[in-house]
Length: 341
Image (tube, rainbow, N blue to C red):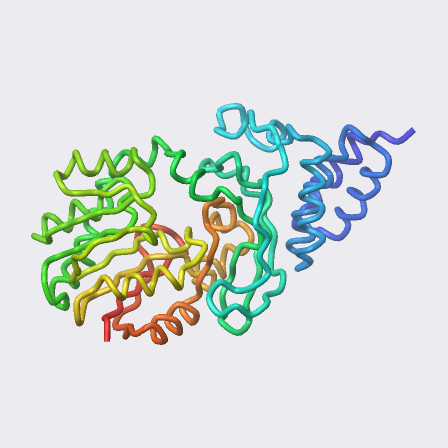
């Protein structure tokens, strides 16, 4: 009689170093041991992702949660926010076409988002990433039908406390912006905990903010005594025009980033400055960390630009890129400064 627990432990010991041998063992476990079949499917999903077979990875990941809806209790510790998560199939939009150019993409990678501390129930725990070769851009194949509702009604305590350690790096960026901005009116899209808006106010900018999450908007407005509107950026209406528009770590959350960039262009004065921070899937960090890069597991992210894709579309939409930096805040993110032509 086969000792399937020992068999499973042997497969676990081979992960990463000998993935193909581990795969053979996990497949045998699935066929012969019901108790270990869900976690074995999950491991197979990880292996197929590393073997560059995203479709098989996606299928096995999903099967793992279908076999055991409470798989989270095996994958994460008891103090993890998603420990009590019970899998149910959400209503989703499935998209094969690039949100930038409309061309059909091809499967690129598949990851489990549930293990991240900012997982939001209502999203599927498994994300399939598509690639557009024309734009050199990655985009989510699957995301919830009620995306806006889920984002508006979720907030994380760790995002409500400003990180004062961010101030020095923000100040260097803000100092550069003061030399090229045509005026002092600044709009921050996605204020978060308010670090950037606070430094902007110190640099004597006249700051207005937007955030889709009411707790974030209210907290920053009260803390800094500035107007912060609770609204989706694409639905934001104003007759004002701004000299600087900040999109710090927000464009990757948007299902229609091109429309967001068009709107940013329309809200800027002549020679106005657009500053963007967003993950770069071709960053030095991502090239080194590969599938252990945390960005792959952030459930809210729907788009991953490369510098090539972002610069291309900024050029098309009427911006001139004047600066590029590696982010000092988030590993694998890029910071791009562009001026409205």
